[in-house]
View 1 (cartoon, rainbow, N blue to C red):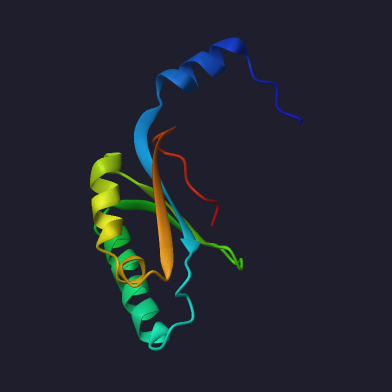
View 2 (cartoon, rainbow, N blue to C red; view 1 turned 180 degrees about the horizontal axis):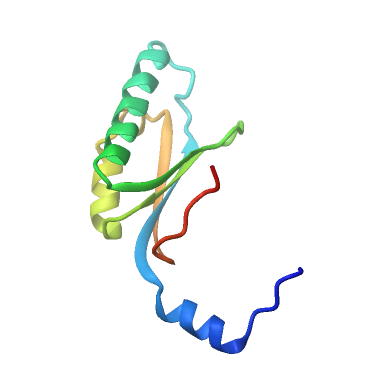
Length: 112
């Protein structure tokens, strides 16, 4: 670590934290079912649409045999869970979704 961080900087950052929801998507038992490609394409279309609408702030597909992706959502956990329960892959048991409340810092971004 090359950057020195003061106690005051930590306090200021902590005070700026805002509530979000994190959706953790894991591959489910029906991942390779008949018609999986078409269902997954609709899942992708829906996730990108939620991102475009600002409901998903950060969308991270995960390159793994067990985890499908992570989404940081701008809505409360109960609403995030309701949205994810309506996802085509979740409904088809291709993806299992856990939603948790989390905190993050407005203005954080991924480097381009």
